[in-house]
Length: 391
Image (tube, rainbow, N blue to C red; front, top):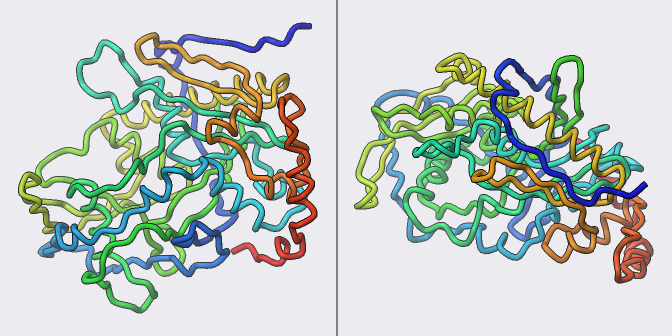
């Protein structure tokens, strides 16, 4: 039979009005630090710890302080292939196969990408107001039973020098320390290049069916050195908005975050004057229960389930594919590409990744990457990879 190299399907919101997917059984399988040089260390050297006493009224946190000395990782990420961080993490983990490394997952990606895909069903092309979801493109590639998903657009695009972008990082500096018993250092330049992250195994459930996901995410802070906490900022006297709440709930649930700590802001952004005057904490389940958020989140999980199921079926006949959503046409298109095509567009895996997990290159590639993979296999020291401990 002829392999279909192209498929498309419409996004019909009414198909999801009575459906309600969910995520369950979230469990971290790894916590790790990413250094300024973008190397992975299986430790908590970059972890930040929540300052509990700062969750209160009557604070004054100047979020414009140090704006001119901000060191942003956007420039570093501009030329980094999308899957390189995932590959570096994978080769530093125990496990003989890619399935073992990703905790038995069928899909691996970042929580923001999965959230964006799911919210596609909420898009309304006739709405004159922002819906929180625009066009997107992802690349999906299957390796040893695990489908890696990378997104064409990325959160950090160039250097962030405006106060709106900077203020959230400055708020984090006021709310965290480098040690569980330390004090916040609010005078040093804000530098977001080094991060503390975790990989979380999550089950995506729709009816009686489920898909096994592995989600990566940065961790803003740890409470009592254990519980992950998310930071947000919001203007005083304004609602966060329906779509922002859906984003918050989905991104939190995908990785098991239960608490959101928000800095309530005042000031004038035109004059780069922003300060936090109180800090409040909300539970994710409380956000989910208001303004039909639960219904929208459930529909989004169901759409994500359907999209991933279609991708998985398509990749039974292809090694890689490009998936895109056009909001003006309300249509998703899946087309076959080779792994070489993916690599040319910045979505390739590293030779070390292929060598460490004993994965053969794509046979459909027109070039011969086998030589570089064999060389990587010869150079790579497996004992080093297995010496890392999982936290």
